[in-house]
Image (tube, rainbow, N blue to C red; front, top):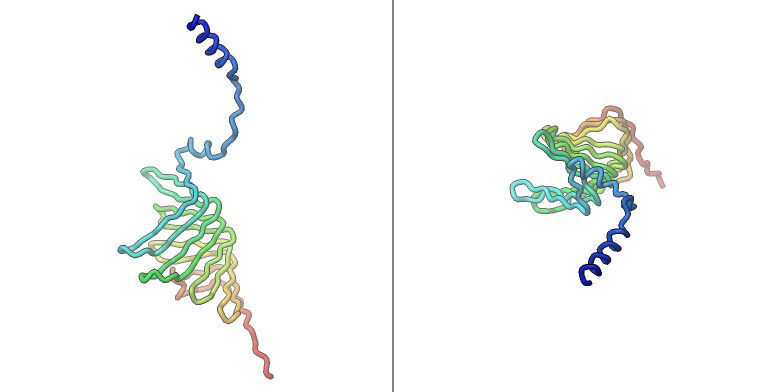
Length: 182
């Protein structure tokens, strides 16, 4: 009798299962099947000679890695803070998208890129490319620099060293604030 009851219970449990169950769609599942790691609420700390140089955060990052290449992609935006050796904040960077290609030693940031330094200056552009080995930052896109005194410099394309102390614009315009005489 117990065997029959057990059989009936199992029969009803399994007969209630459907072959075409509605499984909620998860766009990340397609990416996972491609061998891509998905990281949420990311914080990466970059150091050099035991000194923290940068802290990079983002809501979601994809990591593609194999023997030939490694890429980190921030698909929902990125925030980076850059520090000197004494851990003083030197600059911040915000962008809607970032991609680091390790083999090329390049980092691409785009979509509303805003770079601010500790001197109160702000650079705005749609794309920046940081060439790590060459220690250069470049763009061919339009840019706007707002200086602490209100001076605005605009142009198309530039090449700079990574701390922006040497800056070569490909095309430049400037707007200055004039002080009126009393």
